[in-house]
Length: 215
Image 1 (cartoon, one colour):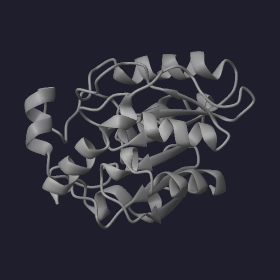
Image 2 (tube, rainbow, N blue to C red; image 1 turned 180 degrees about the horizontal axis):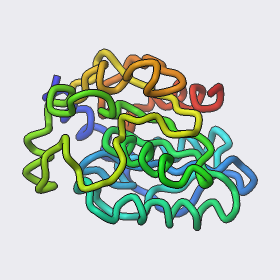
Image 3 (cartoon, rainbow, N blue to C red; image 1 turned 60 degrees about the horizontal axis):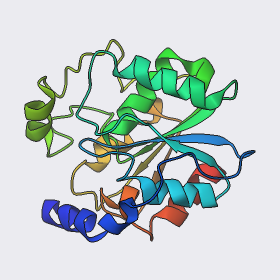
Image 4 (cartoon, rainbow, N blue to C red; image 1 turned 90 degrees about the horizontal axis):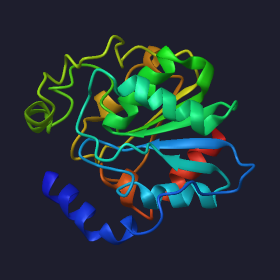
């Protein structure tokens, strides 16, 4: 499954080309896409385009490659959200590790956030047991995957509407970790795609856009 995940990402690198500016109708509901571990706004560019075509005003997180949790990461994302929102609440769509960031930002700054959507994010349970790249994460980030340098627990449900999208075909994060329990989120939805597919699969995009609209 891990091999298929790598192949899925490599085969769709063409989606990463293009402008990283805000996109979508100026009057659309504002939405920020936060990339996963060792990914960037270029990795999620196809998803951003799909969401923009679906009527949302979309931006990336604007902070380059996601190398793992740092002490200031939540404050930096919150500042970016505040600037992008310009007085309007923003929906956060976090893929994988990006979903953990989204949940913590919503805990700390709920006045800025409309909703949180996680895509294959290992927010629930033991993150060593629930994802199979934890060794790589700890080597790159320099801290235990279960003890990141942030004050809030990503497992705690934020005080905003929260949807967890997960897949039984995910080759990186277990369904239990990405789905959580009823008290961890307001709703959950199973999608039939790989872990990388959340960000790079043209087949997954319409279902993600529809799920976000309906939620």
